[in-house]
Image (cartoon, rainbow, N blue to C red; front, side, top):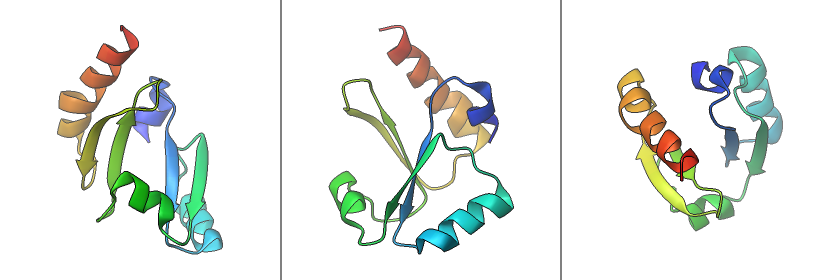
Length: 93
């Protein structure tokens, strides 16, 4: 939520294999950091990205290339130690 509030990078969510209404309800209850939230009931998008366990986080550059994949929850250490430095590097070209 803090990363979303920072405005450093747009964050897009993927509702992977859950019901659409259940996913939206979860976001309403616990907070919605996403600028957009896609819905993948069949899991096809997840297959394309190689998702095999959730949560997973991807950093995708402006050309659509996956630059980082993190499996598991985003901890403050991952955010400050890996995610933010990579995002800044990509923004600076």
